[in-house]
Length: 91
Image (cartoon, rainbow, N blue to C red):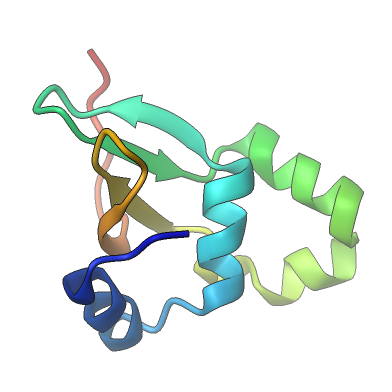
């Protein structure tokens, strides 16, 4: 996964571990933000898929990280990361 320097700094500041970043890239649901970027976040279906592949115990231990999201540009480079604090409006 390609990351900008900004994204690497933000993921460290916001306490998002590399495993969660990989899971977001692999299992996260894509939403277009309307400005040319893609937001990836966990949904109920993606959490269930992670449970199937990695086990329910691991998912329950890491449940605090399932509010994380990443923002990618059109070529898949991660621009920034964060934690959801409110609902994402889909168009």
